[in-house]
Amino acid sequence: MTDAALANPPTIVPFLKFGADGAPYLEGQQCADCGEIYTTERMACSKCFSRKPFKAVRLPTTGELYTFSIVHRSYPGIKVPFVSATVDLDGACSLKGTLVDVTPDPEHVKTGMKVEVVFRELEHRNKEGRTYVSYFFAPKKG
Amino acid sequence: MSEDVYVLGVDMIKFGRFPHRTIDGLGAEAALLALDDAGLGIKDMQALYLGNVGHVTQFVGQKILQQIGQTGIPVVNCTNACASGATAFREAYLAVKSGEFDLVLAVGVEQMGKGLLGNAGGGDDGIPREGLLGSRLMPALFAEVGMEHSRKYGTKPEHFAKVSVKNHHHSTLNPKAMYQIETPLEEVMGAEMIAYPNTKLMCSVNVDGSAAAVIASAKKARELGMGRAVRIRASALTSDRFTQRDLTLPDFNTCTRDAAKIAYEKAGVSPQDINLVELHDCFATAEIVHYENLGLCGEGEAGAFIDSGATWLGGKVPVNVSGGLLSKGHPLGATGIANIYEVATHLRGEAGARQVEGARLGLTHVLGLGQACAVHVLEKV
Image (tube, each protein chain N blue to C red):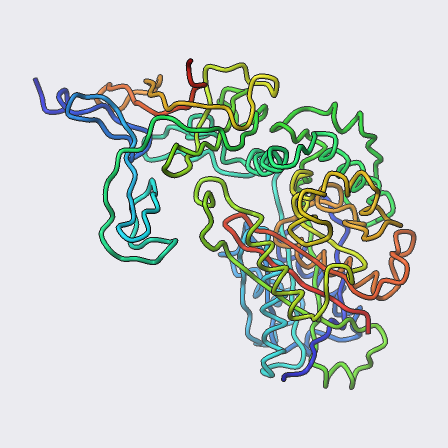
């Protein structure tokens, strides 16, 4: 087996990581002083300005739909309609994403609904032929 | 304390689509209109501040002077997304306020294509992020801000739609607006859905346009005559300070509240003193949230405020009597100065059929995604 075959799949965002067991998760960067969590690496905390090294933390997989829009018109080639969602992850940061597994209309999508982070393979493949992985939100089951 | 600063001349071209004209030609036309309005020439200007988004790396300000008079004055090309024109106007104001110059020109100009604004967000891998990671397109971002208001206060799609009905109505009275068409509520709500709850008629119109203003020191304004001068009572510009979700969903509210607070304090006035407002209705949802952000009504009251008719021409505080970005059109870099033109025209009592009677104080607001928020308070002399 080559190294490439052993490596984790390519991802759509750099903060999507894989555990030792190969399971995907989202990783945040937590400020050592104020505890604010970001999904991007940074030089300092934009909330408290601390320059202490950030701590990598696993982001929770559950949250609440803070707000959304149902997008009916987008660029050519982008499948519509889809639900553009802003989710507050439980006890962590907020995160932008697409809400799936729900009928994209205002009767089925409600602010405040509980959601979970799910990981899906995309149709896209990289040069080595490996399938990209991204995260989505889905209504929380149960 | 330094002396007051005045708008001596201000004008805009009728907004429209001019694909066969040049960006500098469009800007030059507004520059000459504003100079004519002030009764001055380019030889009288000591500096030029230019606001633009799409062509800003191409020395648009200098190219305008190459069309109307190369006097060798300093030129600053400003870009700040949809606040670019207001930023250029503010830089011009600050230059005069500082005492460096007595007469300067601010020009805002934009030449746009049709269609959606935003970024599909393809990385090195060529995979568009749009649709995969939600939407970064403007209609969706501002729709999400509207839905946040709905979540907090129960605001309904009808409330947002009424903004469009009002602004399209206002534009029927403005010959310089892109459109002069009435759009009843059923038509607005029944139009093609772009990003729920914003339908096509609830999205601003991408147009080409330009606007310009001649800004003068008190000394120069006295010398030239104050007859049609408009006093700049306050100028405020903010960016996005840290707030809980700003890095996920751009926070258009906080930077607007911050800029409004600074502007009201500098002007020494309260929102109740303002007679008319031109605010950044890039989408119908935006106008609703800005009623509260600018203090025109109380928290959570924006839905009832539009229902009451307060923001219609003839109401308590008419908002976007020009037709707003929704119907006058939104040429990004020109918008901030076109708003100044609209308010100044009312303060001068020259707004014709859409004149806000007895207007003494007016406010302009623009918001550039990223974020840049500019608020100006203008006063009749």
